[in-house]
Length: 170
Image (cartoon, rainbow, N blue to C red):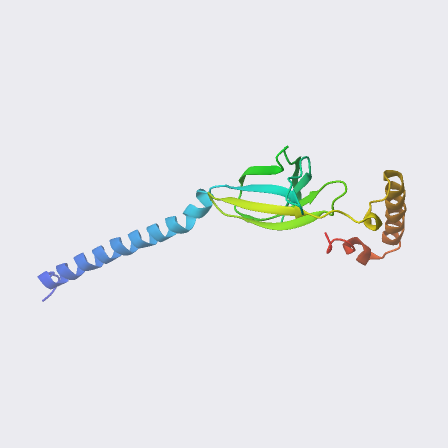
């Protein structure tokens, strides 16, 4: 039989070539599919909230803080005269909304934003009792300054654990 190729050998070569072409194509498509999510990021989503008091009346000019799930501040805003807060074009993921207004207890809400969707929320603020009234600005800043001085002194003496104190509650 020597060096001549038979029809059978040619047929096997053609099949092997086609298998190689198809395998390479499948591998290319799979690679492109895995690459696409990072190449085309997910479409943004929105948050739409309304802030009310317990009686149902809207709370205008309430302070709203938007934070990442890792407690990084993204921005602050106020509700409009109808108690509405809207934030558009947020990457899909988890966020934290902190809402406060004088005479009310602050509220915190965890929010999940989905791609191309608006997450609707209704936050209800409760009136503070007189015992819970916030201290005057002068008393609060003096207390904060004293706390910062104590924290700094402890950090300087090697109390490394103090750096993490308070982070877990934020």
